[in-house]
Length: 301
Image (tube, rainbow, N blue to C red):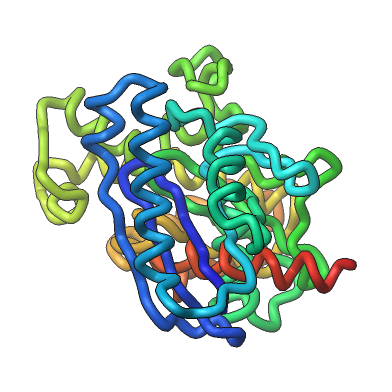
């Protein structure tokens, strides 16, 4: 059996899967309040303890072959080193070391969360039997996974697919990566919430934003920003399918038609048939994909 861990900006998802990656047991750890309440050193200790507790509750008496962890940022998968997580105030490499030390006989693998989600979609979801595609994880930020010739493409430095940090507005809003005008500062779910707040509207849930008549213009502008990034992806990679995952996938049906129309108006090849779908795995994608990292590593050896 395998354990997959998906570390996000507001929660940590865990799954215990069998060797065919069917979910046997799930865990969910709410950490949003911890991020707000604790300083970095205390936060590291608190999050590590929560993760180890979550792993132990899944592990019990089961024989675990691997533990995979997905991080919202850049990862060197060979060195098992987290390069950069712009939206998390954690010492992620210390976290990896402590978890590996806690389970010394179980190999621990890491990758960025969007790549993990992409692996899950390739093996079990909307990207099965698809040759060239892109997965976009739209939530706190925007991450991505690229599929070329039916395989996950990570790039020469393992940072391919960081679509959230392509600049779409010159001298725009400052991003946590250090640049200005990044895609995720305009088209993430956090960006949509900020845009509503700047207009004087605050909602308890994202669903309320999409359902409210007060925010119709704001949502339309958000979709416009989203369409700029997606059109750029189509123009550069000419993929056959783009999958929308993360929090934005839960409301995809409400803006799908508008999004496709806006993307169509921006791509250079107007005759292209656009295939933009939502994730089939939804919120389980990252954790399931993380649980697949050990098997993927074994296949490459």
